[in-house]
Structure formats: structure tokens, C-alpha cells
Length: 477
Image 1 (cartoon, rainbow, N blue to C red):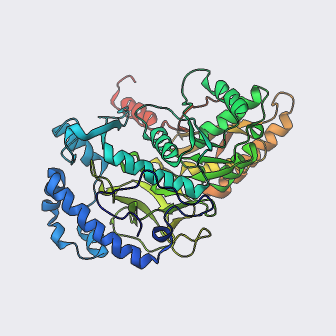
Image 2 (image 1 turned 180 degrees about the vertical axis):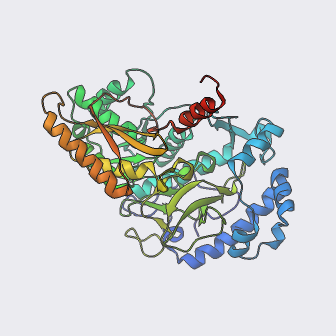
Image 3 (image 1 turned 90 degrees about the vertical axis):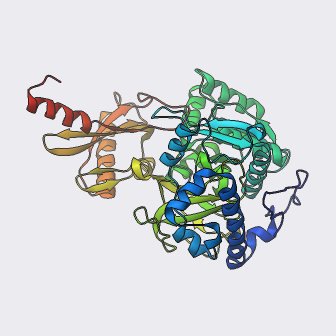
């Protein structure tokens, strides 16, 4: 296998021939069984390294009765090594600030600090070593090469440059590959209109961002009198939220921009987060197993599910030395398959990408609903104006689902068309979910847009229960 060592030692000047489909032909196309034998050897190295350098893992594994000497097969790894949760990481950092006792390198070797925003609790800090950053750049360059990015291309990175890892990882990969990086960013007021103007003037080859932002950008460009197809984009790389693997969303983006759409992205903690990503010939996401070892597990038993079934990804770094994640539980939902891929890579495949987070799922009258399923249905509906809200509410003792959906036409001038659209939305969502849905049609542009990840679900049942409880005790709400 090419450049297969731990810690990794990549040649920073290496590039494959420009007409090569593969960055590392052997690693990407070798028989899966041979790769798994090499991965087992790497897992033995990684577990030994973590045992020696991270009190966090020694403590966790002692409690589970696991020792690196016990690791003799992939089955041993998947059944004997306990999973790590994000709560475990937060608790470690609270007890051993700021980076937790799973940091395996000296503080002086830290090169980048990133992390979560901490808007829903204690922020999680990511400490990435200099050598790890180079390995991340190499891994992202390799995956982006598979999408068709080439030296000399210009990649517009239209994502927030902050603690968020997505923009920085895409930038590192573009720089390593030899592309011209155009780190435009996102988030400031008025920036989307300027982004459209820059894209029209610069004509970059590619674009990186979230699907939500790309749809918002297309509408803004149209409002500015610009046609997104005139930007000349050949490919668009997305991460951060479900969408790019949903056929209706992908087709809409491709129609708006005239570009190929690629899905990517696992977790910020797992950077290189492009460890699950599509290629120029294979839609959905490949599991780049020789970068990050991916299992898809039953969410309850946390045991690996057979190919063809749904489960939650569990990830293990094979190259990170700073804060290695070993069996990190994602909390997402996906389906994986095995077998031949159009691009010839012999990795497991997520044909529908990541469906979304399991805790994003909500239950209405006993039916489990994922927001991405509603997104897909609306993007297939003629007249959809590009944005919607999902409001879960309570009517007496019955849960209700209200969809506020924008209409692409002029409601005032075309009330009959708007009503037909409303009925079509209700019919499609009822067919999808098997339950009655209330629909409210709104003028296009009336719902707020975002320069980052979409947040479309509002659940006000908690307020209903609180008011009901207060009424029962005689207290004023």
C-alpha cells in the first residue's frame, strides 16, 4: 500500500498523473479483504499508541476489560472496544481542560485549535498537531482528486471561517492539491450578494459550502440579475448537513448551477471529515476505510449491522496522533452497502449519504420522521419556492405537523395556483409519512435564509405540556 505508515509520512510534493482516476491506485482498488488485514494491523498500532499516551483510553478500556493485546481481529475491535460519545469527550475536557486527557501530543506541537461553538453546552476544543494537519490536507486532497479537482483549478470556499472545521479542511485540501484557493467565507450581512458578484467575475472551477447556502446563493444571484449557470462552476462540494445525496436536492442544485454535485462529511472530531465522500463516478459517499475506519452499527446494541441495513456510523482514526478518536459514536443515521462501485474503488458505500442525526428525528402520532425526508419531498414538488419550516404543535391531545412552505409564484396574482400547490404539498407529505399534514403557503422569500446550516424544525409541544402542567397546578404560565 502506498504511504502506509503510522504516524503517516506523506511526500508533500507527490501528485498522481493528471489523467489518473486514483491518487493511490493500490490503496483505493485493492481487494477489500487485503485492506482489512492492513487495517487490523493499523488498529493494533493506534490502540497501543492511545493506551500509552491517553489516560482517557486506559481508563475507558480498563472499565470495559479491554487491553490492546486483546486485539487480534476486526471482530475483536468491533465487539470488545467500547464506543466513545461526545459526552465522554466533554466530561474529559471539563476534568482536564482545555483539551482533555485524550490529547496525545505535547502542547507545544499543537498547530490548530478548532471546536464546537458551545451554544448548547460546554464547547469541545479540537487540538490538531502540525503533522496531523499535513495528513488531513493530504487526505482531503486525495478525496477531492477523486471528485475531479486538479492543480490550477480555483475553488471558492463559501463557508464560515471560524471554529468550524469544514472551511479549514477544504482549504487545506485545496492547497495541498495545488488548486487556487479562494476562501471567500460566509456569514456577514450582504456577503451573499458579493459572493454572487465575485463568482460571476472570477469564474472559479469549483465551490465548497452547505446545500442550504448554495440554494440561498442561487436565489440571491437571481435577485441581483445574475444567472448561477454563468458562474462556470464544474463541480460543487458540500458538507455540514444532509442534502447533496438526496436526489431531488442534488438535481435542483445541478440544474441551478450546471455543475456536478458531491456529498461529503462525517464529524468535525473525525477530521479529515471527507473520510466519507463521493467521487466523480460514484454518487452518495464512499467510506475511505484506509483513512478512517468506519463501521455502521445498530444504534441500541452498537454492534455492526450487515451491509444493506441502516445504522449509525462509528468512526476510528487511522492517522491522527493528536486527539485520536477510537470508535467515536456519530449519532447519525445511514445505510451502507458493499460491492462494485462505478469508480472502481473497493470501499463500502453509503448510497444515500448521511440521512441526518438520529436525535433530529421526531415522532408524530407514532411515526418516526426525519427532516431530510420532508426536504426531499418538497424539492420534488413543482412550485416549491426554496424554503420551508416544519412546526410540530399540539391540538388538544393530538400532535400536529404544520408545514410553512414558500410558493415560487405570485400568491396574490395566482391564488388558485397557490391553493393547488398547497394541496399537492399536503398530498405528497401524507403519502411519504402516512399521516395528515397541515400546510400553509407563504410568499417566496418570506422565510429567513441562512448563511450556514439550515434549522427548519420548530417543536412547540414542550410549551404545550408546560402550559398544561401549570394550568393543572393553578399556576400562571
